[in-house]
Length: 262
Image 1: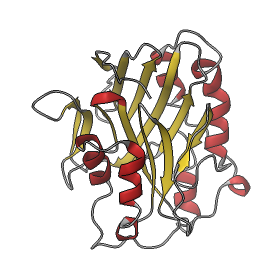
Image 2: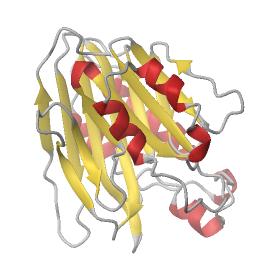
Image 3: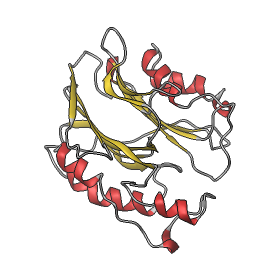
């Protein structure tokens, strides 16, 4: 997962509205959104190369997403897959804060990442790129996260928050189709506004838009998750086929449970 916008306890009638794009190399094998356990309590896409996932829902209102942290260094080849963090959390019986507390003791083993994880006890942000290893409980608000710290003022993050806010915050009825449309924004900032993360100007330009479309790399899928105040949860996913027009949106609904909702 490379780009997240989310409204936490700010949208009327909703505890959470989350929109996300997953950017990846086009030849990396991936399974689309589905239940990944026999009991059908965990919803997620699957990375078929290294295992794990980038965004998922679990029982008792669990939700988690991860983004890579981009700083220009060469990723360690001996590091475990960051996707296993989401997989482990959704399958564990631990609440979000306890899981992250245990994770931060071994977080240095992974390449750089940002983690968003929540449950009935709250929503939390954590990154292994801060020396203090702080776990940040999030207050109600509207947030953006990509490949730097939470709410970093990268141009595409600023633009996305501005364009998506009316559809995610200033409404009492969320329309996923409108959010998907805005997640396909291909606007690119001028070179002077681009972040400098050590990957070179060519890649900074390529990665500067909300929706990325390059010959070998780009936005593979978009997702919208809504969790209403009554616990009703919906997970929408749209996959992009570069060889054929594909406008289909898949939706899974999870029934409310006594602890559903963050």
